Length: 128
Image (cartoon, rainbow, N blue to C red; front, side):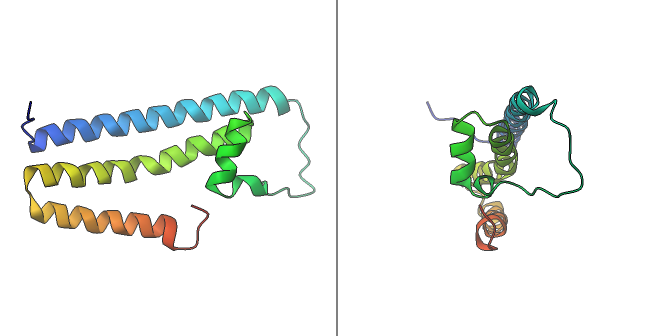
């Protein structure tokens, strides 16, 4: 059955995507925080020496590996990656929706936005 793609339909789906992405991300961060606090919550803080982010949490593969090991920090980082990915997925879906509507102007502008988003994440020398 062919779906009648309208602006309203796309807005509803995009809104649901954003709600689902942010909710899933918040839940993931919350689970990671509970695990982290259960394991390290009573450890006294040492503010005399700065301990930076572990090197395994600076790349996507390291984050996924750490989260699979049920590391609290790894799961928190995975939740943050999911939060960053949410608007990218939203823009990618919008491109598809505008293509279904045959709305070339919005398709071009949204494509430019996606290129800028992906460049800012991948092309600027970041870990992602």
